[in-house]
Length: 174
Image (spheres, rainbow, N blue to C red):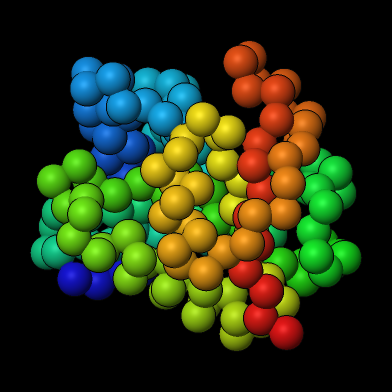
């Protein structure tokens, strides 16, 4: 198992991975994320993240086990959050679009990847933050188990139908 930053050439495969994960969630009525098939996260999203050098994957050989984005861009108005530390842009990283292949879930892979993200962020940032759809109870429990603290909910002005607010979590380092 290897976690690596993805190149633009790998973005399409990651986008297809995201499509497969969202299709699985929809087919099994477990789409707590409210992600939309071929819309978010999508091949275009993965390509944009790879161009910005923010796209990562966890692979075993050629098989993608997980994918995520680590970015300084919160993709919304994080100033609306009641964060415990008032950090300026560039002082924190945000974990976006974190997905683990359905056949790899509940095997500690997710926790290993989040720990990788925290270690990666701690090298140059003061916090790692994540926002979660309020109904995504499994993610809330997961991030709390990974050392994140809930700091409230806020409208991040993303204008996503059906998601007026996001639950905000942080893991501070300094």
